[in-house]
Length: 391
Image 1 (cartoon, helix red, strand yellow):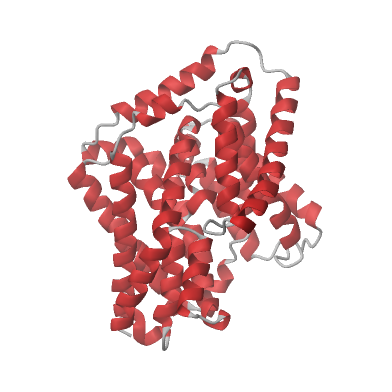
Image 2 (cartoon, rainbow, N blue to C red; image 1 turned 135 degrees about the vertical axis):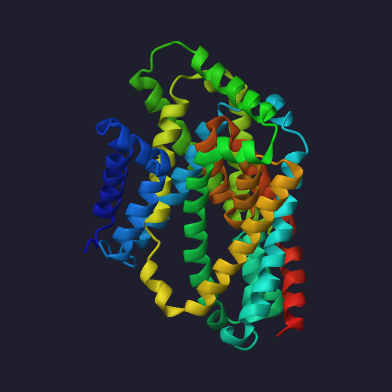
């Protein structure tokens, strides 16, 4: 069992690198069909969840290494991805994104109410309180959950099973969406969604990056890494400072806002035209995915089966409603999936999902995730009060 933090990080990155290289190593028809169904990003999730469950590393002993690296790399990745952003083109995506976002929010709320009606007897007394706090998190983020927990005076002991449910169900759901996004063409054809705007925006932004025919040199990689990490560190310090004066957003949200602003500003300068933004940000993307997956210990499922079943019922209702609305409103899979994860995953994972579809569309994931913080507390409290009727 790995207990050393550096060994843990080194093993994760090496394993992720091996899995990313598999499609280049195995080029036959059968392997390529397998990789189309289970691309490297999903293999990383599955592989590292399995290794975590098999206790290849000690979660407690490696927690400091994980906490010290995951968010700093995530913020650096967002900054470097945003250097390719053109807001004028992003705005062309129109109001359908907002429709998708609020459809996701409402379906999550409905999922919590229905799941609680089904499972209330197995969850114990006053479970609606901790579920209400978790609903705030799944509509917005951790800050919303803490706000609802304080508003409802939910003790920490009552939050334990809800947090296990959040950790495992949300992690598996992220993996599911990363897998599902690969079937965008079939899904969009089924819903008859007009993806011309999204595709044209993504292609235009990517074409601009490809138009830079200068060779990728190691100096570019060095300056992008240095700038990304410096922006990450500075933004975290500023986010922590601002949170002390303006606590209506948590420090993580303030950090993402600062990173976003800096990324958009630098995108307008010659710095945004540097060759290598896609390559460096992709490396960081896979490292972040590996880190997230490495904390999903599926053996914890046996400790709270009723809560986990409740979580899966919520997600099943949410996905069912999103698929139905996508068909009725002709919503494409990118809009539906990013809207869903903007609620459930927030600023930590929605941009990651958007980046796997097109790194040029990362700002869409960030904007939608930030909307969740606006509605999360009120929405979670409303759902909690509705559930209390059936408690």
